[in-house]
Image (tube, rainbow, N blue to C red; front, side, top):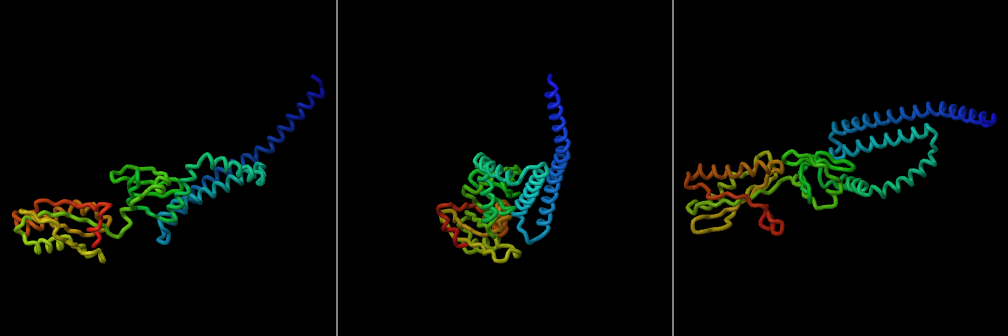
Length: 287
């Protein structure tokens, strides 16, 4: 091998070793910056979430997304600083990020759709943390609202991981948004029970509690009259959180009230809950 080639090879390896020796400290510092950035991002995210949850001035609905934004911002800043540490020029980096952002945006259209849907959910707030919502394919209590997904818990304790677009692009019912919910019962009584007394007894039995001011009083009206029975419809309003309890306790309350007043002869023949029909709710609009 010619002497000139050997000398050139030695010079190349010496230059490469010097460059590697000069680059390794910068690479090590960049790795440390990234590690510190992820640690600080997680710590700041938890700190922001804890601070927001401890105050009454911030809606719990926006706590999760705000903490996520803080965490992502810190991670991006750490990544930029680390790249600058290894000699990447910011001008070139921004150009590359622009092109990469376009390609990633086209590849992750569904993810970006979820982010846009999450922003709209936080802006318009059709539901909040703790509300029970029913969508086209999902139903449950909202436990967390994020930038990408929402966490729901069904009535039987099943965890549901719902993309934000699955709650934004479909119809949605919020069972907890109103201050009260209408509950109606059809009560079939013997004909020998005086209607006026029966109506007053039903209204008194389903009287709203004193701790619920502003809730309308119960109403009762004669719905149907047959040869051996009279059917009375009684309507009242309860707090959304008490709807389930009302469905279980009100039939027993009605039965016990009539048996106590009239004995076994006055026991209702049937007690059925009436569910408002979506296309004809007119008879429920008086309350």
